[in-house]
Image (tube, rainbow, N blue to C red; front, side, top):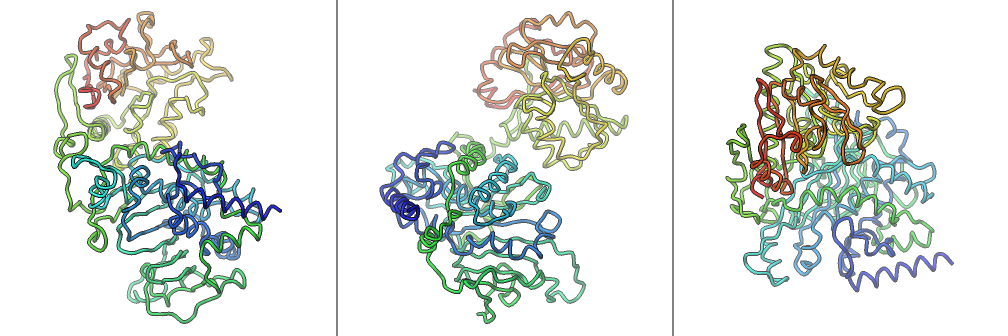
Length: 639
């Protein structure tokens, strides 16, 4: 009976797709068709794209054999399926077609929602999930996929490079009746780097790539292994060639679905009688190797994806379908990236073979960039700022102190550079650099910049201190130290003894005066920091004018000569530990980072008020003999 139900659901899903996803929403809210989630994430409006998209990938004969292949060849793969042996994983789906006729859908969703969030992400989970004890146990398979989602590292705009084929904007204007002034930012190409926070895959990049108007129609997943053999003369030897496994979905130079294993790895075992080894080949090359350099497995009988899916239904297999829980996990992972890319200008590319190397991407630490300068240039973006203006850094005065202002990205680049200069000078002069960092969201971009680009930063000679801390366990997400650890400290090499979290939890309780946590932290500063003068203190400023955890109405005078004190916040958690104005003002340099349009009104108010730390604690920042620098982005400065 259940087989009939499944078949009926499939029929209903197909009819649903024919009628169009009329109620489908964007981003994380793209869940309008959860009731028929067996069809998969964000698909197309028409049945032909259901055939060509979802079914040809999810029900593709090669994709459905990823887990069986891993199981049958576990004796070879168990030792090498990890970060020590895999250089990277590439999951690619290239199209030669444009988006004509699909613009109403495509302009709303773009390439990431169209195929990467669903199809390529599914392949990624199949390649990296823990093998279930029983491949036919759907619950165990889904459970192991969810474990991968929970281990995926956060994505931001630095993890992606996006493009748009040149004719797309004109197609949007035509099909959506837009004016000639309309400028679309919808990406038709994306290359995204994902990292998995598991010991097995730590530091191993997974690259997901898809796009329209590319040079060929092809789909594959490639596992490229590290080659520990260095060839001196016989470079054509099989051992000198790339070591790789390719799950080839079809089309391209090979023209048929196959699983390819380079001969310098191992000879794979056949999974069942439905697959065969191909020993006679045409003279073709696949991803840098001649087909003769591979062991090639292919289906005995090729089946259309739709037929494959129906066969799975009548076999009682549900592994070709996606659950609501998995779909929610997928959107939870992808939504932050989509939001961060919302105003990003995509690189224009001509399409087809003319793209040349324009869309080649390179990996710089945890960042993805295009490998080559753009040939097609756009002089004005939708915000009305020119290319030269977007990189301009302005210096001036704010509240009688030095000010640096720029667009957000350039401001973070400048602040990171200033920090490195301060660190290098301090280490050169005294052998150590003492840096005190605030919590909040503003410094996150700075932390990521330092971790990904400043490899020469003298971390081994740097001591990191906290400006303030919430009275919560340091392992909780609300902890400022937890944020600092996750976004910076875990990515750099520095001594454990050089990291100084505030002791808010002592004797199994939080921020109790009798435990003397504030006095303990002050004692550490006095002993380790020369004259208790930090080299650099980085602050933020709240909407109410608070800085560190020094809030309006606090009895700041009561802190006297103390360097560290317990304070009260109007927001939960109320209890805080904070450096005092005295400790901050003894620093050699204090930077105040202010970012975002939401801070514009605050910046305007602060420019008019007099120093009054009781009501505006930030106005109490007046370094005794050091220097104060305001780092304010244009959004906060100009509104």
